[in-house]
Each structure stands twice: as structure tokens, then as C-alpha cells.
Image (tube, rainbow, N blue to C red; front, top):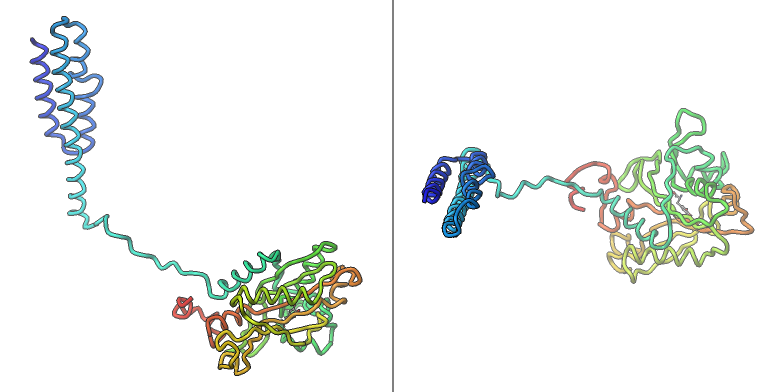
Length: 343
Ligand code: DAH
């Protein structure tokens, strides 16, 4: 039978041509020529319809055999060609793609930003939104509206950077943000924290910098009491330091609050026994606070007969120093990676 001889030739030629194909492109071309629609093999399958009933099964079997032989050989050759390509590239390029990559130094959040984010998270859970306000302020917002009139000696509590524009200064604290927030939200109730950089025209020492962060807090609404202030700030201290930390409030003075208090937490280094971190007192001062002064509420647009509020302010650099026992505040702005890498 001619057709069987033809199939032998198709197989033999196909395998010979395959042996000569050396890359994936050649193999793709070979597949089209020897297994594709227009290949001799497919023509043999097509020709089967003209065969007699007796010839057809025999030819069909043989045609299928040839097809499987060619396909199997192609599969093997593909694997061999790919392996050879990889080996050639490994030998030629000296690049071992199976090696792990070199790690890039990624950096991380500045230690003060880590503290800031913890503070934001704690107050967010208590329902306080972050309110951002400007670093360049008028002295009305920084002082007058906070119940510190012009020429009042209380202005000496903050050494101020002035600009060459009359009445324009760098804010010395985040408290002016209280007035911005009140004027924006009045007559709604307020629960905000106001984080940001403040500036002081001061001698730089291990304990004081010319610029640092503060986080201010403000709550305004009907029937807010000193109990709310103490509860909120005590809970904050427990969440930030540890759930059992003890706190105490000491009477203090700020022009924008009445009464005013400073909050201390029990020294978490010596647990109150007295050590170098707490300077032997057993307590660490964390923040200033108080009930918002009626004059300040009025400047914010509220009627102090109808609403009350509490406010507080803390220094995240100082808190970071306590948390990590950092002894020099100047490290924070030195950009020395040997310091920053430790956090
Ligand atoms: N603004 C004060 C400062 O920088 C800190 C402060 C104290 C803020 C008491 C407050 C507060 O809101 O109630 O020294």
C-alpha cells in the first residue's frame, strides 16, 4: 500500500528535520511543517476517506502512531533545547538566576513618627480626629486668642521666632490650632488632636531643641468636666505605656486653661522607686492640660455658659526619649543612621 510507505517517509523525514532544529523558533516552524494543517501527515489523514473499508483501520492506526511519534519527539526536543539555552546563558553570562537577590536597605519610620502614629491610633480609638493647622501663625492666634494679651508677661513663657512681617511668627506651640478648629466647627461638638512642628528661639541643649513636635488635644461640648479630662488622659497613658501605669495630676498654670494641671506617669524604668530617668522622683512629666478658659472658648465662637471643654499638649520627642531612654534630644534631627537604625 503506497500510503503506508508514505507514512514511513513522513515519519523518517520528520524525525530527521527535528534533529536539525536547534532553537525554539526552529521547533515552532517544524511543528507547522510536520504537524500543522498543511503537513503531509494531515494530508494522509484527509486521504483516508478515499480508502476502502479494509485499508482504513490499518492506515488510521499507522497515521496515529506517526503522529504520536512526531509529537513525542517534539516534546523531548523542546525540553532539551530549553535546557541547552539555560546552560549556554549560565556559562556565557555568568548570571545565576537562581541566586536570591541582594536586599536593598529600605529604611523605616523615624522614631518620633512611630510615637506619633501610636498616639494617633490611641486617640482615634477614643473618637478624636486629626486636625492639621499652620506652622506660620499670627501672634493673635499664637497668643491673644489663647488669653495671652499683647505685652502680657505670660508671652515670655515661649521664646518666639519672629518674621520681618509684623505680627507673623512661627508657632511656639500647637495650641493656636485650637482656635482654628473651634472657628471651623462652631457650634458643633469637637474632639480633635492637633499634631505638628513647633518652633522656639532657644539655646539648643540635650533637653531642648529649636524645633520639635507637639500633639495638642481639644474636646468641646456640653457638660464636659475635669473628670472627662482625667479619664481620657489616664486611659491614654495606660494604652501608651502599660495597662497598669499609675498617673497623677499636679496643679499648674497655663493662660488658656483654668484650672490647669500637669500629668505625670509613674516612672516605668524604676516603677516609682526613683532612678536617673525620673531624677529620683519616681514620676515622669508627660503633658500639660486643663479646662479650656472661657475667654478662649469665646474667641473660638462658643458660649462658655453653654459648653465647656478640656485641652492638653504633649511632646512626642520627650515621650520617645522616655520610651527608649534616649538621653539627647538633638539625635532626632542629626540624621545619623547609626542612631536611626536602632528603632
Ligand atoms: N501649649 C503648651 C506649651 O507649649 C502645652 C499645653 C498645656 C497645651 C496645657 C494645652 C494645655 O492645650 O491645656 O507649653
